[in-house]
Length: 339
Length: 155
Image (cartoon, each protein chain N blue to C red):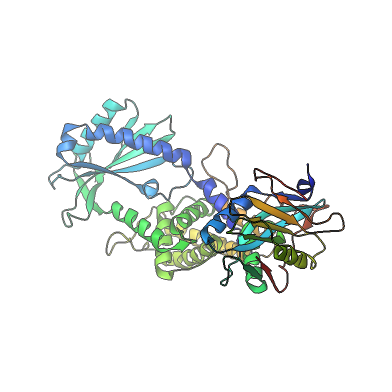
């Protein structure tokens, strides 16, 4: 059984958005400073929080946008979303001229030097659950009116941390690395929709329901991927349960056909992962893992996420050894004492 | 290039892993197996694995076949290197002395089961690592401090 822990460790490093993370942190700092300096937002009790995959530390290379949740803790239900978004837009436009774009329910600031954008989402305390949940504009009409929709993105960050503490591999959290690998597999095997968050939630449910205990990344990946493949067909009409809100399901832009297509593709991917794990030949196994994880996406020079071992050819065969003698497949018989 | 260099090459990761395991086990001995291959009469040591001995003491560590074989197979699966296999043993000496006569006897005894020479690495209390390469058709038993060590002695 080729578990290839060394190669998986390198693969996780290869999809880690190190530079993007540094840039995202800097962009977040710049935007927060501007918003917190504004008198009106101060009075509304502004408090910022990074949400989205970057905020939960489950993002993979590349990170193109960072979601920033701007909580207005003192806001009441009389707050007009259109009007406050206009205000936030103006504040940001003054600080970042020609970089700001007003969206339907948020304000986006482009940072061309970083090649990423920050999406500012305004939130007010939820009317029904003011101490726990928040409401964001669903869509702001031209007259400033909007429907508010309940949300609780902070909860997903908490659940992510808890899951990573609960599921361990060699003493370290394995949930977050698995979400990253599943996100990479989605990018490789699924056409556009459903998106990365949808698969993150599926991964979360798979961990919670199976409570797996494996001793390798490869073992975890096989069991989680198979569970996602088995569950996806159940979500053709309604998405998986939203772990952050009771009696709500995850919505997606994906059509029924896209969900069905994704289910077929992930089933293929799960089979490939199982074949890779069973394969005794290291190079042949590594080639299967490489196909499963594909290449880095949206990068200047896409590279295979899973590198083949140095002793393997690109076609999954082993390089000729020549004068080399491989190490012995077995330790000495019996017991030898050292003192 | 001295005698030891001609017959042995040890990856830096190996000595750092052994040092960490020795420190964690102190004041008891610990040990394990070495993974690598043979090339042009040299033993290439690429990776080290700890093999727990529940009866290890301040002066003894024993390699048990069943436990060591499981550790070797897991490491081979994890490492993903088709050339890797067993090439020798390592253990720690909490007291500051080098390879003992018992050590030399044990590694030479183990070596008799293979066509190629084996390596024994001994982590000493002062952080140095002594290497022993067993006798073969091409050379007698060779021992000395491995290249990471500040002082080197070969016999």
